[in-house]
Amino acid sequence: MKKMYRSVAGLASIAVIGGMAYAGASKVSVDDSVIAEQRAALASNTKGAGFGPQAPRDIDSATGTNTRAFQAAPAHTAMNLCNIHFHAGAEHKGGDFSTYAGNGDGKGYNTGFLYSGKLTDAELAASDAKAGGLKPGDTIEVHYVHTTAQITPGPTLGACLSEAIKNPQLRVETQVYVLVNDDSAADFVKYTEVSEVNGYHQAPNIPSDTGSPITYAGSTTGPSYNETGSPFQVTWSVRPKVAKVSIDSVAAWFNDNIFDEKKAHAVRNLVVNPALLSKIN
Image (cartoon, rainbow, N blue to C red; front, side):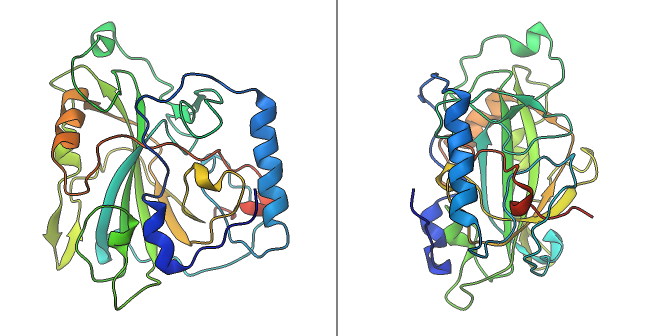
């Protein structure tokens, strides 16, 4: 695949810091050689081109030799929340989500990383919830995207831009959840509520009990970047512990959210090339 360079104004076309809708994707799992070829293409297409550090990554590893520097974004509480979306399977690896789901179809479906803990039979019981094809036991990675631009939260990453600022700083507060068939589990709708706090659009109920976030310099993600580098600079904060949420509440969120999200999104291959990773301090 040829190198792909996009202007900051084209950020909206990326749709999410991710990829395409998940439900209905093929369950076929490609051979390891397909993923190896994609990683080789990524290395070839980025070598010497000046790309900055990429995402997603293993948050339990501090390794990285990419020295393309950019200023870390402010704390998310001093930025505007612009978009919330999530991926089926964690894009990042580490903490409570280190079980590989398999190669999937080579296009970001049925891959990523899964909750490594145990769930009860009751939590895993089949559900009639219409949660975009997701089922109890599935792992999702939620991206709470923040921008330094003055915006109104809304669909796609286009909501993170404004006519006044086309190149805002971006930060993604990241939380991995596992879906359970339990009405007493946490409410996903509450976790994704949006309100104004101290003059900024915020998601004030992002879990605060899922470990200290691992912060690093990276990029936008999604399978469109499996073979080419993302040119966008993103400060990531990834919480290492998983939170359980009711699958019914996820279905309710799909039915009514300001981001026009109806399905989970596909994932980018984990970036493992040290030359494409920043060092975590």
